[in-house]
Image 1 (cartoon, rainbow, N blue to C red):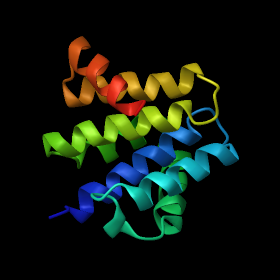
Image 2 (cartoon, one colour):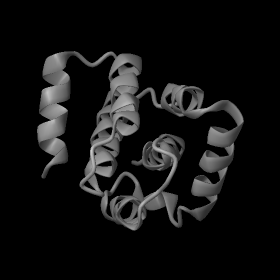
Image 3 (cartoon, rainbow, N blue to C red):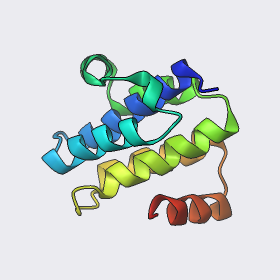
Image 4 (cartoon, rainbow, N blue to C red):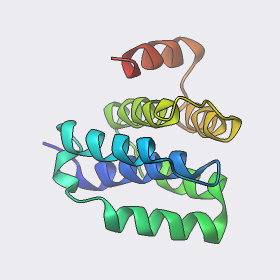
Length: 129
């Protein structure tokens, strides 16, 4: 059974990853929609517009690092943590432009979730599938 709150937080993290460089490309928005509608754990979230609006407002209020910390802190299940990292990695590469701000979100998630280098390698390989 999907955990709706953790799924919503994964979508929030994807939005924050996309916005980390100050703008969202169409390919990133499309990737968020595609992942949210195709991954079984995320499907119950439904339309992502409200989450996007809330995440963007929080980003403007507290900055990307704090917004990511808050969203990631609500994801406690190891499976959802791995899924969040994979999804954010997919968003980071969705526009074909790997920028330092988006890489910083992945590095922050690695630290917050306690992933070691082997975990990151494994999750990045899974993210490319």
